[in-house]
Amino acid sequence: MLGKGASSSLNPRILTTFAGDSRLIRSTRPLPLLLRSNPGIKPVSMQLSRTLSGITNLLFNRRFVFKFRFSNVDELPGIKRKRLRPGKVSPCRPVPSDIPQPPYVKSRKPPGIVSGPEVHDETGIDCMRASGRLAAQVLEYAGSLVKPGITTDEIDQAVHQMIIDNGAYPSPLGYGGFPKSVCTSVNECICHGIPDSRALEDGDIVNIDVTVYLNGYHGDTSKTFYCGEVDEEAKKLVQVTKECLDKAISVCAPGVEYKKIGKTIQDHADIHRYGVVRQFVGHGVGRVFHADPVIMHYRNKDPGRMILNQTFTIEPMLTIGSINPIMWDDNWTVVTEDGSLSAQFEHTIVITKDGAEILTQC
Image 1 (cartoon, rainbow, N blue to C red):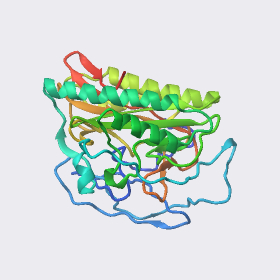
Image 2: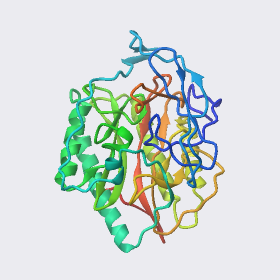
Image 3: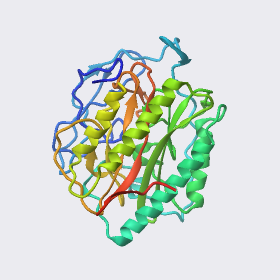
């Protein structure tokens, strides 16, 4: 069962939750289409990447024409709020030279997903706990700033400063050309919103996605926050999305099939008639930003089982309406095609002998 207005006509496979236009990710299987749109009615150019040994590639292997454009009409049919529009993006913020940077920053090459799971010894798990704890603290601080009138660029500035003050690097900054230190996805933005000059408005919901690189390890987490007085429809979506994440984490343990995560999320979303976005997935995380396994958030038949001391993210994205994503011309911002609300929550977990430990909590 799909959410209101959702389409079952797509045949998606997999994208990471941090992939842009030409950011190719390794794969041995057919992959999904990220729906990329330019202003005006233009064909979407997609290209095939080389096949490598990892689980998944971001491929652009077909051409489509999307009737999506920025127009002078801001109103959404039957909805009081206005359609999200891009604001002005400020210059990238500097990072002190003594703070270690992930390798992809210097290479300026999109690293994609690294083949093989992130499995750690005791020291590595301690490092993951430290990076996860800092990411969680930064996220909670960022959330405390959410109020009508603040711009998402101001949130980025605060996040950037807190991360570098703690001797860490903001992982998104410079990843495949991403220009900011955090992702801020407002209302119909599914993911990868670039912080800009738009001020948050009363009634908005905003997902803030924080990843920090501390002592050679990434901690990755996100949460959807309320801005001012949010209506009941939005509150329910946010609540159910968080429940989907919690339920998914609860089924994790050594030997459990990864596909159980997707089934758990889809089952709960179906009860409430919400759509589950399929084009973006969770991923292994640790010494690299994105690694195997691919964690799909919908029912699937993919093989693979969880491993003791393995770390990965679970990050479901639910929508009230269409699950079809449209990418803005900035090659990052992804929104629902019908302007319906979307919410996301994310944790980094480690598989333990007793189940799973959430690493990204204060």
